[in-house]
Amino acid sequence: MTEKEKATDEWNRELARHVRGFKVSDLPMKVVMPCTWEDGRTVDFVQTIRVMPVFTKVLVGGVLQDRPTMIRVEKDYPLPMGWSYWEYAEKIMPGGTWSPLDMPNPRLYSMEGGLLSNPPEGGMAMELERGFKEALGCLWQIEVGASPSIPVNERRSRILELLDHHYSKGGNPTSFRDFIGELARNPMRIPPPPTEGSLLLESFGAERERLQDPMGLSMLLQEWLTSTATQIDTQPSSSIGGDAVNVELIAHDNGQVRSVSSQEDQSSLEGDRPEDNMNQAVKGKAPPQERKWPDLKTLALFLALRYEAIEDKHVYLATDEEASVLAKENGYVNGGSGKRLRRHFMTYLKAEARTAKGVRDTEALKRYGFVIGKLEHIPEALALAKKEEAVVRTRSH
Image (cartoon, rainbow, N blue to C red):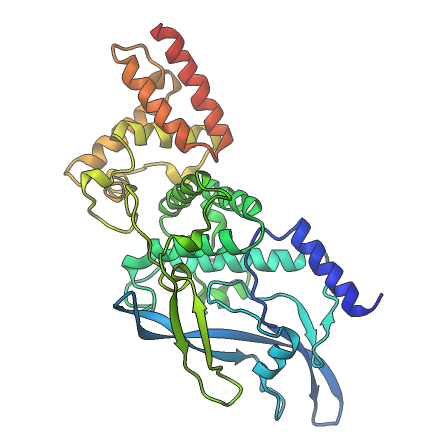
């Protein structure tokens, strides 16, 4: 077996056994290149190449928006004289596609364009998973003014765009949904955006600061899981955005920036889609019709069941201020909503209070029925909710 055949088998095994349904770029990103020292010695090193979008104002659907209209190459070390990345990439993968939403290609290549063996098994899949979680954290935790290419009010649509892209194009939608379900149950697995300071501290063994508002991201991921559960294998997410758009990628002819004319679907470029009736997590005010929960008691019941079933400390409402933020994110903007939400939550932390006999068993059953539909991806909490619902239902007959 040649090295290329061995490397191909390794990659196919990674895809089948370990990769969680991510869409991986066709373009080569890791190239083994020779480096000659001053004493004449030549050693090989891995050159990591990054293909980056350059955001420019373009017309999309008749509206000026920031979109990647140019792509450039960044690298760790100077490239060899006369070596053109785009000529090299075309030789390896003629007509290979690229999107800023893709995960970087983890495979290793030689200068001649051959695929190289890259053990151990599972290593490339772990690299892809780490990269996806970094991308998700960067989209969620935006500091106002720090990232002009991703406005705060587009956070929700950009995250849904990323999820739809990998779900529809990654080749393993079932594994991808399972992975997103795992993140929704434990959002603290998602790291916050790396900064120069945090990376320096990590090099000394310090832990990176935690992601801000992990519960908000968890609820958005669960919303996406619920929406895709009704369209699995029936409607590709690329059709959500509408008609295709043609964007001209402008570039210089120096091998570092490529000129391409590509026909891409609107969901991958525009990042917008029609809003459903769910609340928009990044908006402080939402009209009543956009409320995700029928009332504060139902939301409190969901949080309490989740806290008891899997000890998810991120849903614990320690203060009225925290509860007020969560209430507003879910469309309850009236004064006192946070305090009422926290009061219901603290009551429902006691199992006997959740199933206490009362004159409104019908209302209790409605709340359990709604919450059970939201707990599909948290089996421990789902089982607890169904058990308690049975208690109330038996008593009501």
